[in-house]
Length: 151
Image (tube, rainbow, N blue to C red; front, side, top):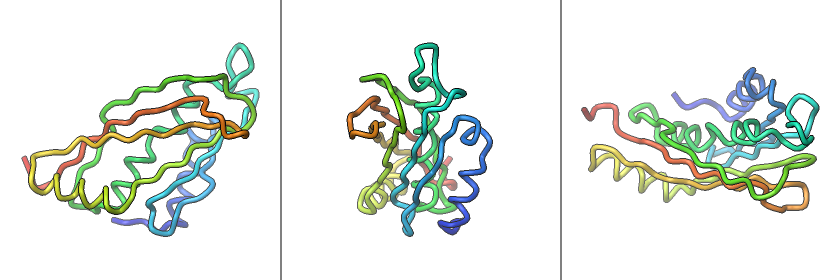
């Protein structure tokens, strides 16, 4: 079931793990191909040296590529996060942001592969950036996609 963009935005921003970490979805495109997320540095999401806690940085990148695929592929497909790698580049201070986007052509390619093969495992990368645009972390996400009617 495809959710309306406004409903999806409200649900995500009231999801307790995101609220607790201070993660906020700032925007979702009308076609749900792009999502912008930010996290302000607060006393409850910083580490011992007063920079962004690594777990919170990862959490702000956790489910968004999966969500984009689920919403655009539809109910006939299973989409799971399979693996992730995070590389910390610099300490995160202030507000950090991440932009998630999957082009429609890539979604159609994934759909075709899932329809002709047992499964497809697309990989995506997102950069977490500070307020000056400096990359503070790179996150690679490996997803698993297949049609529900395949065994």
